[in-house]
Length: 253
Image 1: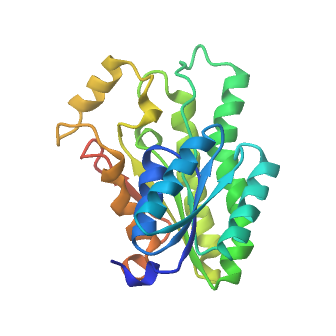
Image 2 (image 1 turned 30 degrees about the vertical axis):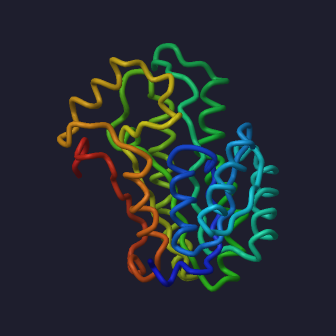
């Protein structure tokens, strides 16, 4: 157990399923108090909290649509009120929404993808920043993507570009917030089998698998260690502005 995570207050957006849920549960196992966030899947968020409590941890539920700035601000305030402050922010909410080519995308789809994957990171971080500063510093961890590194597979152009934007935001925020002792990093998962990929065509899955030296697709649990590492001041106190790739070797940089 990482002693420095005991009693830390963490908000994990998009934590009702998948990577976010796995991270929320592990932070709680490490002794953090966690705000589990959901939107349309409120019941699933409550199930994550129940699982944490069943393991002896502490967690609360916060609900809202992070793609809407006013709701993003409100859910951060709900988290801070419920947790008593904030030390760790994990901007994990995001989705591809639908696959579309460069030749076929439309403006509405573009706006929805960018609101969910990019605007949300800016809005939640803006709302959380004063609380992290008040706590004397902390850690912000954004969820990027291997797609943001290499451009993504066919049909993921808008999503891949949005995740590349998240990578850039991370580096800029790392410079801005360093004087406040707030570290900002990104975890960039590869092809991870979660509800995110429920509608991903099998040929796309196989194309990804063929590129991975470890010869398997990843799991949410494969990603957890990177987030916990970046959340811990003891483990990563001199690391900021970095992108940690978790992809089984699919992309080596």
